[in-house]
Image 1: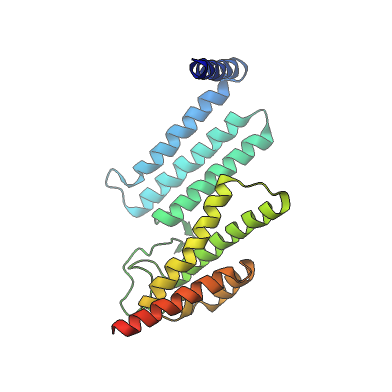
Image 2: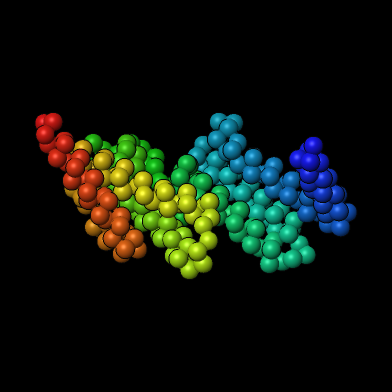
Length: 227
């Protein structure tokens, strides 16, 4: 009974908060809804038989529209509106990089996956038909840096966050996964990406390196034995 009462009170407080916001700052809810609608519309970029150039224009037009709507929703606090708009653009940029061919700088398309399948004799050997080893290892650098930041934050304030645990766990899984893939595939260490591997070794205090090399060596020996 008490739990139901607490839930009812929490729901009532949330509804009252929304009502108060609508009265005091009605534009916030209106433009937040507009921003959400525009973000949803970005998914329609590849609809209607548009060519890639038209899809790209649709995606970024709706993205910038959503960012502007978020900025207006944050007013009269200009700093909040600007920050939310930048976050919206950043998230859409990350989405464009990893899942589309819409991110274009000058005449160059910047994307995690190649538009066309990579040649079979690509060097270094890619991690997939459209993912180069160079791109993969720079992503690993970024992920390891994020995990290291979370570990450092914990050492400073001794407070564990769920996001930090997930990020660190992801960074622990990475060296084992890549070590197995490279070892069984009889590839060079880090598939020849020496710069990224060195950077990762430094920012992970050598932990990534030890884990990767251990599993890489074991997988390499297993692959050799099977042959």
